[in-house]
Amino acid sequence: MDARVSDPAAFVMEPTDQGSRLLARGDWVIANLGLVDDDLRALEGLAGRELLIDFSGVSRLDTAGAFVLHRTLRDVENARASSGFENASPAFQILLDEVAANDHPCDEEPAERNSLLMMLDRIGETVEHSYQQAKSIMNLCGQVVVNLGQTVVSPRRLRVTSLFHHMEQAGLDAVPIISLLTFLIGAVVAYLGASILRTFGAEIFTVELVAFAVLRELGVLLTAIIVAGRSGSAFTAQIGSMKVNEEIDAMQTLGLDPVEVLVVPRILAFVIMVPILTFIGDVMGLFGGILIAWVQLDISPGMFLIRMNEFIPINNFWAGMIKAPFFAFIIALIGCHEGLKVEGSAESVGQRTTLSVVQSIFIVIFLNALFAMFYIEVDF
Amino acid sequence: MVQRQGDVVISVEGLRTQFGSHVVHDHLDLEVYRGEVIGVVGASGTGKSVLLRTIVGLNSQKAGNIRVFGKDTALMSADERASMERRWGVQFQDGALFSSLSVLQNIETPMREQFPLSDMLMRELAEIKISMVGLGSDAAPKFPYELSGGMRKRAGLARALALDPEIVFLDEPTAGLDPIGAAAYDELIKRLQQTLGLTVFMVTHDLDSLHAICDRIAVLADKRVIVIGTMEDMLASTHPWVRAYFHGPRGRMVTHEI
Image 1 (cartoon, rainbow over the protein chains, first blue to last red):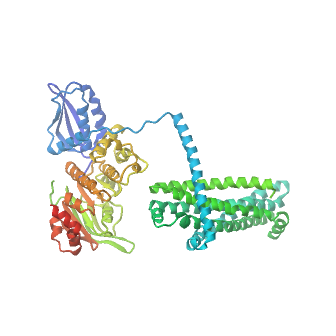
Image 2 (cartoon, rainbow over the protein chains, first blue to last red):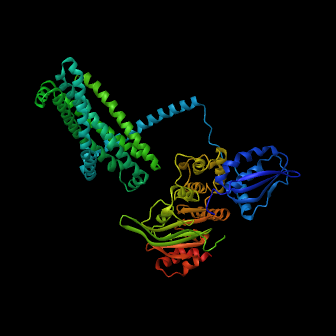
Image 3 (cartoon, chains in turn green, blue):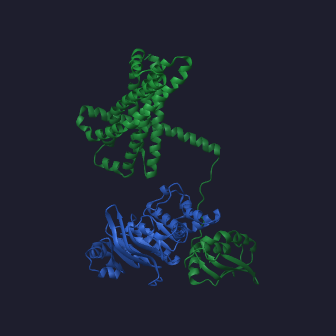
């Protein structure tokens, strides 16, 4: 009873007066069928004759074995009425009846269409989807603005506990990673400056390079990207799993507005914390630059700071900082929006989380480019 | 149905399972005979599903032995384990179908992974299984999210039966079905059990199922099996929980019908 590998399934054909007899023997179970299936299919040539299938040598049979033998008999075209099974034990007969009763071909999967059409189809779908997506983000944005307005009028509506919770999670807890990464990037920019500018004998300009790059772009951009990957995605996952769990629906039936309860505190927390994180990022980036300038170029930290103070106007710092709340708002908005869009299964949470990170990083970099053009135009 | 006492396919002895310091089972003994339908009942949180998961190896036990077909599951090599897994099928509560595959592909998966069968044969066998569990032919190309709860359960059962197992484990097979659907599902399990000669181990809450298809019932309470036997044994039991369960308003309704 133990082994499923025991006796392989096999058969021999034996001529009879009217046609032939298939003598099956061995274990006709699913594990053994790979070997005999092709041979059985090759029996089509028996059309118009009699086929008897003899079970006297079969020691075990399962539905798969019963099916292939049933199919063999079925596929003999115009078989004589005398065809059939012989010597099948009652237990085997039950299985044969079962497969005969359930032998219905299933619907095919829909055939693939013309690939060009499919490509156009997908392009159209994507365009339509992007349009709908933009519309629904703007819709949520509007709700948030209205909610924020109401909060200003009656501050008691603000969920203070939730706000501080998210400020801690998305802000305070991100300080170590943001410090480390901006420090490393500041150092790398200084290295670049050192190695390239030295060939011109202009290594002192490393100071300007580092300060410009970190203050205007890198500090805020890195912070935004890290925060999007770290907390924007968490927002989607949190709200998404609440959606799957029908918690959002429960809130609505209790007269709570999910935007007010879930979205506004997260967005506010981001708008408050991301500028602070950006400031920390700026400081650490400069620190990295100062360290490399000191080690590689013998520019002492004192000199670095004096030169920076002299040649880098303060508006460069503000040019970076102004962007921070905008990035914060858009990342949190996209994170929450994708979370609210989750439907059905846990798989959807994963998809939406990925989408949320991709979208928010894309928008942040795109917005950053717009800011750069704007600053050039207004000469900031 | 053949019920030869002594032909034990699953035997659990002195089982102890725990999560952290929370002990779920302690000194739990249970025997399942070949060809029977055994229903495991118990209050919520008594570890019915945990017992099922422990027997099929999804949880590890802290102490005790579990023998399936006479072999200790804890001492099996990976190969033995794999061949053991081919001899049982598990239907999870909500089907646990692979969401990226169609129903047909879900049923083909175990065949594809275990045996060298041609694509055409796998498809034919999967079609038989779809029809056997009472799904319509239009269900085959559908994806799990397109199916209703009852259909997902049936598809999950079809996948559990894909390799013609000897034991089938069912986790709350009728939970979430309407009474008519649940009765039809009970019928299906009974019919399949008889035609395929299955041993069925099912965890359930459904008194109707217990009446309709279970040969024996095991009651889990106080971390072990407190009573095991036929419906008559249950009704005769004096244990307070068993009395409350089988003589409560819902229990009475069912028992009075027969």
